[in-house]
Length: 427
Ligand code: PSV
Ligand code: MN
Ligand code: MN
Image (cartoon, rainbow, N blue to C red):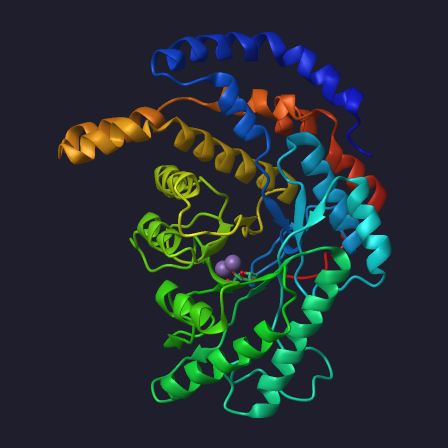
């Protein structure tokens, strides 16, 4: 264990007085609004977000990789890195694996390693957007949508294999993201490509264990630039409904055309009971995969407002959501970056929990548009960081995870152990 309980205790003792002073001020303000701080802390304490195995190496863009040193060279190392993040934040108790980037050679040993860090296996991700060495049929012209049956079957079999790995690891969800599409008009028959995709997904779904769910991710463009087979939430929903009750839509925040109202998509999917998972990141232009909350924190809050409302009014039976960060780039220490994302997500969640839903409903009923905005922004403009920190400390994490990570020079230790120029597996 790189981060011991003693490290955390000593650090928290140092910062406790400061945080408590902030907390006391907030408590006084919030109790006037009818918010009970202890209830809020309890809700935040249990909040967990999965870390993607591919985000732990430096330089996850396709344009370049610049090593920061001490990168994980194996799945075991990646679990250790998530262990560091979880020990410090107590909000990263899950990892999401991409197969074949992170094939576990010995699933029992990997599972045990994860358990030692208090980590479970969240949704498994298949990968049919790259050909693997020696692959008998290519995905160049599509995988689940390919007009050639042999390529489709290969992709179906791969997904079934991913489910099997996931079963051994204790996961209960499969996320399918397809790069399938066309870069030029006329390249694809839209209807046939969609039909093939539906049939392939259906076959994968028929192999899904009873307690598993299938998450269908959508994306409008990239790597194909004319059309993508599963381009939007409507297509994803249609395909999920075509599979069965345990198939759901997965929303990746970066997978929308500019200015799309993502919070409305969340509300719509939740009303249908079909929102199954989330990939958090931030973006300015497209699928930028930037740190959560670094560009549009208000949008993140508005999305959480819908998520909280949806979870509190879950008459349509949405499953417990699979939350995951899907962010990766090549300039920051990935462990620091992921902790910043976790902090931003927790902040947005805490702010959303502060929204006075009753008052909002009343203001909406009265068509008091000004007050509707006031109610949302009152919550958004509350500096909830002391509350998020206190919840983290209550769960056994550090009041200031980034500060402690730097003080203990964890990156320096990792470089000492793993070397300066290890190349991580995966993206
Ligand atoms: C594709 O852009 C995506 O968002 C999918 O979730 C992939 O699994 C992930 O990024 C990594 O490429
Ligand atoms: Mn994604
Ligand atoms: Mn993406």
